[in-house]
Length: 250
Image (cartoon, rainbow, N blue to C red):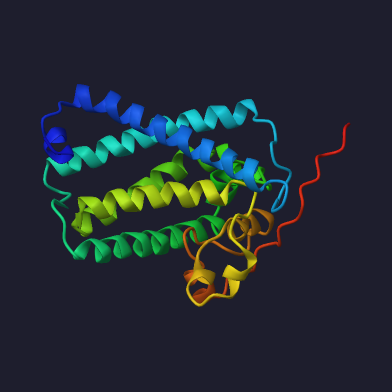
């Protein structure tokens, strides 16, 4: 039985704990990947003071994010079961196109949403929480205000309703989404400096690209690429990595 066929057999009481376990696994893998990046690149390509302690507030908001992401996943499941979301099955050359639409479409939608948050009162009451951490660490990917989580999740569900994509493209996008999120909050830059001069690679949203946004909130509102920041004049180069120096003892 394939995965989509299996999901069609599930009741909500079976799907909900499954989605909770799935989102918990994603959280653990993303945070773990961030710490792996710190362990591998922290001594040579550090952007911040790595291995910072995790606070109770960070754990609490990460738990909220876990629960809300589970709810968003279930909402997508319900919309699919009701026919509002159409997921194409099988394999086709269109998988590449679908992935590109999801990748660039969400990058644009999140850029607009992120920019809007920074230029409305929502910044103080909602997005300011995420910016309490100017040197982001792996868990900070999940330290978001509940309204912000619902906003990003709503954009994803809206795109899914509007654009029927192949299942393989959806899975590929979701994996890439987590990888970029973990990279942007790792506090290290694993990409070689030469990539910033390559014709295509220079447009990818590197760790330094997002780190720069935490340092200067006027720039770099994109997530996966710098395309929209370059187009709308909000781009700023990320800081150059430096050797990690442990914080002085207090």
